[in-house]
Image (cartoon, rainbow, N blue to C red):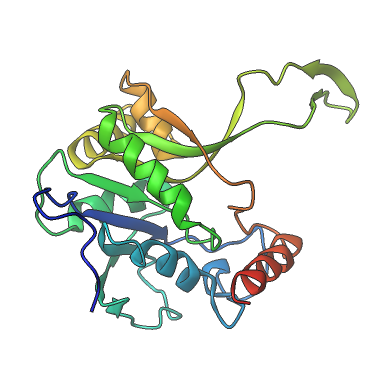
Length: 242
């Protein structure tokens, strides 16, 4: 039996739904199987992402946005005793997230939703704890991110360096990203109606005039994009299972 996550006399923290956009083909990775279904540490990549979310006590369930012709989805309906629902996603990430938001079970407009990449298998509970705390307290939402630590170079068309860019105040956006359900839905609709292709949820919210909070996350919350990323992710997951 799962132990209660709050003390007697306190109100339980509101539950949160998670969204995983997984309608992409993973063409940059190569191969016949979409990237999210690659086997890593004994499970499809997307299974690790789902388990990292659903093992958290505040996550009520997950909505996965899939391609209409997805033949690889294993048919999960429950993981960690929580519902795994699915809907048909779209051609762009924002289309899939919007479809998932609209397919979620009824909940208040100000309830939190998380959006997490299917190809990020190594999310740690401590990062999720801090993200949820920040997003609960900040009406503009919050995202996991990592400060840029490498020296940045600007390239010219000939493949040579044209400048060294200052890295102060620059962060790499990670996931999950957490926003109010109504807030994120409206921001994505506005971006779509204005013909803007947003590359993450925070970008849509920023265009709506809000300033999401940056929550520093672990550097090993990597997104599997190349075969080398896959090897590193497998190593990291194997270390956690020891």
